[in-house]
Length: 209
Ligand SMILES: N[C@@H](CCC(=O)N[C@@H](CS)C(=O)NCC(=O)O)C(=O)O
Image (cartoon, rainbow, N blue to C red; front, side, top):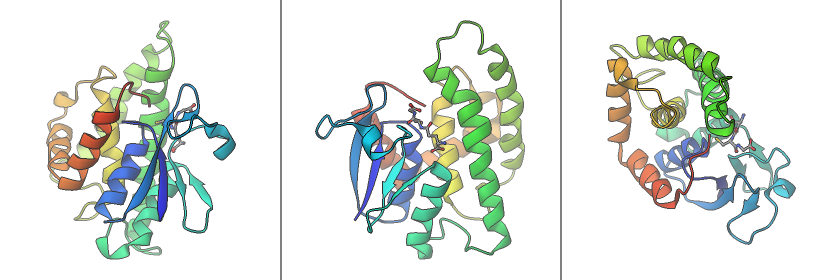
């Protein structure tokens, strides 16, 4: 059985959503990101994954996979019938990777990560200004479209849903982009997404990006 190392409402939420949308059973292990300890037994998370970051997906052969873009595509490919990623070689697979990369770098690392992890001594002013321009890209793309890639839910939507959820606590009101607020509402109406969020909100003590 697949195993996911996660922290409540961190970017690993996208992997939980993907597992649930894929209809895959998994074992979930909570990580305390500040102390790098596992909730299971207080052991050192870094000895499992030197990056010290979630998500980590442990595969059936015991290998460990990190990086949301890789983990999400792996989950999608375990159960291809669910259509959570276009098949390898399909032109839309590159569109999927394009979005996963944009969300992971331009939204997550350029904005959400510093906002939640660094003390705001004024140095966050530039990322704060830049995120407005960054978010206008998915806002324009999603005008008149239901999903990021093709005509159905993919793991790119799982990733963007997570990022959208954290924008409000990060001080960004997505109501200024009606296509993004409508998108988030649509995504949150999906049973798997709703259940994944409810599970993690119940576990959450701190929000970490
Ligand atoms: N590039 C990684 C970033 C993962 C990441 O930054 N995860 C955060 C939670 S959202 C984390 O575990 N941070 C703890 C740390 O960096 O010490 C990915 O896309 O998966």
